[in-house]
Image 1 (tube, rainbow, N blue to C red):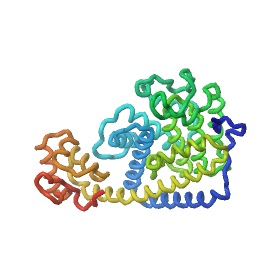
Image 2 (cartoon, rainbow, N blue to C red):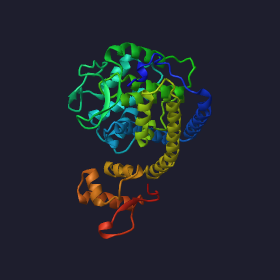
Image 3 (spheres, one colour):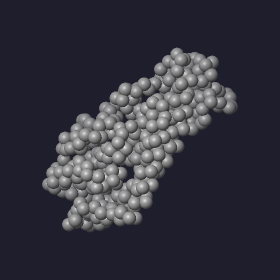
Image 4 (cartoon, one colour):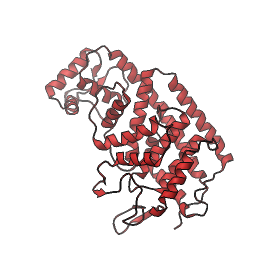
Length: 371
């Protein structure tokens, strides 16, 4: 099997510019409309929208790799680091903090050069213990292939299917030097959104680390998209959209890495996926505005930390129906405390009893549509 990095013309990507130009123009137009709408919103709405998008980006980028992060921990870590006043903050575990550190460095400091040292810092943040699961890996340095070539495989042991084999470790210094030089060439010859798509593909094709290549590739993509937006505020999540198209993403990535240097199909998919991410963000905007209005109504009420935590869960889309038992479990409180918290919110007009009674008794936010 021959991969694109083995071709004589690697890494000279090319594509059908005339065919992709209308799609690129439409994508850039929708991007501008979304950013324009958000610019017209109040500061609190923009902060909440950005916090939601960043939370989605961190959680879904890890989910693509099969790693489940606690969304509440991610949101809390982001809010603390961004200095945002978010109710119901909870402590975050080290694996969460590491991904958050990487994503915030990529998006909030997008103008700084992408360097070898910076990538090593990201990798160290992802794997602070020097292990991936139970396996020890080389951290903050290019892989050495001590245990054989870097391969992307699936299937049970003995019947593995090799989807891709990366360049040998000996080639990595030269490969990464070429990539980083290209990444920091800002002559305007390539549209920044197209550059984000190419950077994602190029990096994940080199696959320079023992683990974490997919997450770092998506972080590089976010850095490039922040440069395209010329803003550190994130109002859409590419990883959330990729997660919903995960199979197609991997299939197309594999096909592209086994193809020729014409990456038109990869770019077409990336632009369409980005457009769908914009649409997802526009739909979420209504929820963000609704949440901001709710907290504006409740701003003068002396809510305790438990009440603020559960209300935020309800506003963000609670899974199932809220009962007093679930309240007690979420807040780690007694049933009596849960009952008092609920009763107080009902007296303030923030919570109402849902339809049904007896064992079906549950509670909903007043004046907020169900998610």
